[in-house]
Amino acid sequence: MAPMKVRHYIQRATDLFNGMQLTRDDDSYKNSSALLAIHSAVSYTDALRLGLGEENLSDDNHNQAANELRRLLNAKEIKTQDGLNHLQYLVSRKSLVAYGDERLSENEFRGLVTKAERFAKWANGSGSNFVSRDGIMTTNEERQLGRAKNAALAFFERRLSVPKIYIDAMWDRHQVDILAIDRDGVGDVHVVLLFAHRYSSLRNLDDDHEWKKEEELLDRFSSIHANYKYIGVVDAESDRKTSRFNLIPRISEKSFSKDGLGRVGFLKIDVPLEGESRVQMEIKPERFRAKIAKLADDYIQHHEADWEIRA
Image 1 (spheres, rainbow, N blue to C red):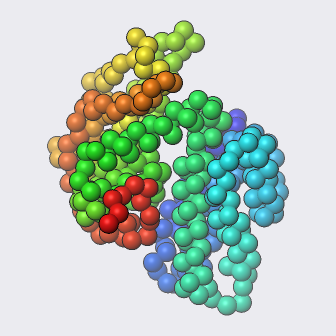
Image 2: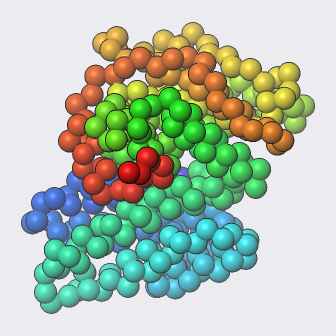
Image 3: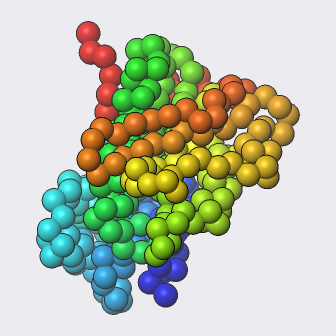
């Protein structure tokens, strides 16, 4: 039941966050957008608390919810807690936004939106390193995906010309693992979604899991606008004979755009316990038609890259 509840609260948080994004630029919806920002953070908090093992979410005191999340993180000796400052700021403004006598100022509103974006990035990024969408993530899975993200970042650093690269980015109202914008932010947009190989108790590769995840990510890509799209298959046991890349016909067919203008590429990312991570291009992506120049311009103005060449 806990994994289902985690997914429920993550979906609720995403819906509320997307509502905030849709209304943020319309001044007539300023207070509504601000409330959506706060409640998206509360729903992310509920998902994290459940994923970390808490069973009772009946407390309506949102400040207390933030304290409970901190307690759970400390109990599991999790150090990445920077998102909690954004959460506490947001919940402390709930009464002002919901019941205040005066309309929010522009600076107050923009501050709430920025905090909500930063908390969502932490919850979806650093948070997802210790709580998976299927429940509690193991230490090995956390390390595996974290190393894979760094390996993918290095891959695009070498491959692109003066890129700006973002890890755990909220792009086009979707959470993505890697976002790379070429030519100092004015070139093509590259997006990566990751998933990890799963092995059976007999140490055989779980093909059904892999095909299911590939189809899920291809479905997600159908609503993500980018020039180049990649699925990254992460393998922490790449020294095993079972390690391979296997794309079945229905997945191959689904990787193409319906109009033929674009194909999702596939990266195999090996993160062995010993030695350096490696990224192999298994299927080269083909360029999608996407009118996203304004979206990219707006993104780089409001977000600091995790990697870029500084003058």
